[in-house]
Amino acid sequence: MTDKRKPIRFGVIGLGLMGREFGSAAARWCHLLNLDFVPVITGICDTNEKMFGWFESNFETIQLKTTNYQDLLNSREIDAIYCAVPHHLHQQVFIDIIRAGKHLLGEKPFGIDLAANEAILSEIQRQPNVLVRCSSEFPFFPGPQRVFQAIQASRFGKIIEVECGLLHSSDLNPNKTINWKRMIDKNGEYGCMGDLGMHPLHIPLRAGWLPVSLRAMLSNIVTQRPNAHGEMVPCETWDNATLVCDVESSEQTFPMTIRTYRIAPGEANTWYIRILGTEFSIEYSTKFHKTLRTLPYTAGGEQAWHMLDMGYEALYPAITGGIFEFGFSDGLLQMWAAFCDELAHGREGMMQPFYCATPEETHQQHLILTAALESHRNRSVAPVASGS
Ligand SMILES: NC(=O)c1ccc[n+]([C@@H]2O[C@H](COP(=O)([O-])OP(=O)(O)OC[C@H]3O[C@@H](n4cnc5c(N)ncnc54)[C@H](O)[C@@H]3O)[C@@H](O)[C@H]2O)c1
Image 1 (cartoon, protein in one colour):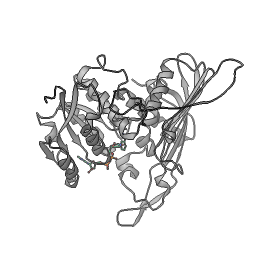
Image 2 (tube, rainbow, N blue to C red):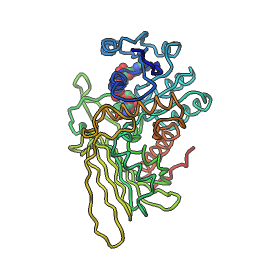
Image 3 (cartoon, rainbow, N blue to C red):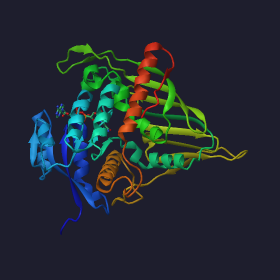
Image 4 (tube, protein in one colour):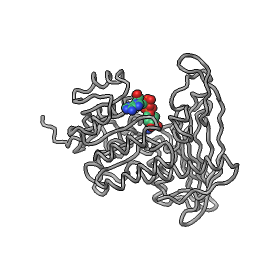
């Protein structure tokens, strides 16, 4: 059988946790139906050669493996790069990728800090023919899509408040070994906010809800952790962050609370959003990943939350029956389909309209996180710059 799908030849830089997730998504592209494009992994790069094995044993298409990412950028066998490396490397590596004319899906936070992010965005402006997007998969789940549809349809009446967040709990264990995500020089001064913040912010930013100001409370709860040799070393990054934001949309103002916690007892990758309105409220959390809660309201009527079990509702149709459920790897697969769709057909020609997080949205994220650091430092409300 001849494969008529257009191959998009990918190089992967950073073959760790997320690099493999992309490998897995590419390997099960057959899960998706009716697409005329397919990612093909032709090159891999990691400074740690031990990471090559899993890719080599699962992908016969690999032509180039290297510890120097410049080799991938110089290769004519590569159209696009997925880059999932520690945050202190984003600026240099992303800029080099874009300058080499390779399309890029880069990991968040898209630069270790605001200056790094702005340097990446400047390079993007110099390379208008390169598609650059940021990884953020949760909005591709069915529940968040229903929330986004409600936002687009302006169903809320007057918005009372918005709450969103991403909660982890494994750092409650004081014996958990420190890694680069808990080191300021590699993860950045944002700490948990840089690691987790883009996830809850993606939908609010797509809705146009960039706050005008915020008050942030940041906590460093576990201040020492064992290193790989069992010695206790300082753990200086922020564990938890609560940002109370003042949003001014075109019609109204409302509070928005964003939580990014590494220490939320009992929570394992809980992404949630709750929007309360005078005419309609909606709530979704991956904690109850099938369940969408909604509360439509008319004046004087009953106030009852409705609970809907969503099946496999996907932006890009898949072989999974609608009666089954959707999970993390499905969200990633859908995000990858959106990136490849935009690459193959352009934004206007996409098979469905929800595109991956843009560099401008990552910039707004940085403006918020930078204001959060200032707010916490001064123990006061900080303005959020208005962005690009
Ligand atoms: N989208 C998500 O849900 C999600 C989840 C976790 C992490 N992330 C992001 O993905 C990125 C990577 O995180 P991870 O959890 O995969 O980390 P990881 O530590 O598991 O993997 C990073 C890999 O990069 C390699 N590396 C380091 N320097 C390199 C270099 N100069 N050239 C090539 N490879 C190099 C490391 O050896 C390692 O294998 C980060 O930006 C992180 O914020 C995203």
